[in-house]
Length: 412
Image (cartoon, rainbow, N blue to C red; front, side, top):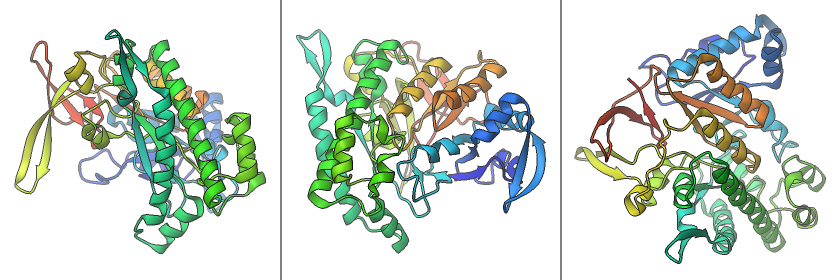
């Protein structure tokens, strides 16, 4: 992930850096958006670009915002990171300054920080009752959270690090990011539509349980093995996210500390979802019920057919990513963001019917709603590749692109 602050003098060049087929092709790029800039956009006022603590140039904030939005409208990049919010709600606000994230944006990291990610496969916790309806096994989910927190914490000590600095950073804070995958499949199995009120209530309940049990498990590990070395009781316990936890967990943290500075993150889980019987990825909608995927092997490229888990096993047709409304995508993003101490990877796909003003409004609403970042993909944009997606009903084929994170993008 390449990130540049919105107040950097080179920001205009950076915004357009990937509008080609030859430069930065292995990078995701995002702009670090400050609250000062967003307020200037709202008010239509001027905004200063700075370097080395000195004012470099004064520009119109709305014009710069239009430039960023136009690039994302056409090319789906740069993404947007609300960098002030990331730092403001960081549990380790007192000892680190975040300037960038991992490649998909779900894990804000300090220098030499590393991802330690894991995802709970939600359809695995659904049980069919009387052959009629699906029930989420909360007790099993709760038990597994405690097991996984302990296992992930052990990874910090057993991992082989590229540099000594990575090891020092990881062991000082013992950061991890637990999240979920298969959300869209689970929602469909329970009889709801992606983005509906019922699906949001389900998401909120699952993430509340994940948040509370993960912190409870980490507190118990701290009793057994000690808190992470960078833990400072008064400062850590005063962080904004910690204050959202139930009071009894806050009191446990005050008494014992936590074993891990951060515990929660929702990744795109593209590869993981394929390995888990091709459940829907992360908190994304299903990108296609059936499609063909090209795999690079030592003997050359091979084509494999992939079928969505809920469609193959239960005959459930769901709205795909480009069939969901922008409001559906944004609602899921904002609910998930409330419960993550790190961040959320989520692509808000938008169709051709979305107007320019509504498109820009997605980003403004994401900032106002508490998200730490936002990424969109517009189906009619200029960036697309070719993937043959077979529709099981009419056998039509669409020109689509499935990126490395398992997201479906369809273009002309």
